[in-house]
Image (cartoon, rainbow, N blue to C red; front, top):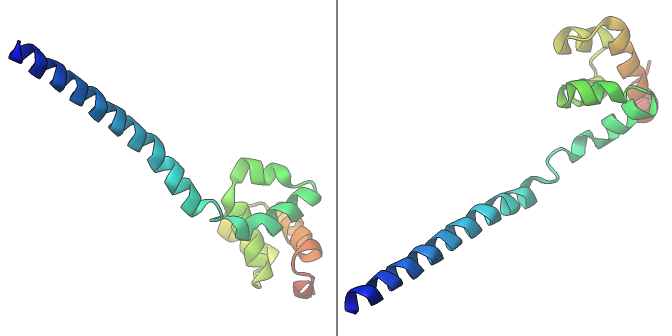
Length: 110
C-alpha cells in the first residue's frame, strides 16, 4: 500500500515537473520578444522611403542590408559606395540613394 502511494506521488511530481518545464519553455521566448521588439525601429524611415519609391521588393528580398545601405547614404556614402559595399548594381544603388535623399535626408542631396 505504501509503495502504491509512493508511486502515485512520483507520478504526480513528474507530471508537475513536466508542466513547469513546458510553461518555462513557452514563457522564455515571450520574455525575450519584449526586450528586442524595437531593435530595428531605426530602419523604419529607410524602409518606408524605399517602399514609397517602389523599391519595397529590395527590402523583401535582401532584408536589413538594404536599410543599412540607405542609412549609409544619409551618413555620406555615395551611390557608388553602397553599390560596391552592399553588392547592388549601380542603377539600383542610385534608386536607393534618390529615394533616401527625397524622403529621409534631403540635406544630403547635392
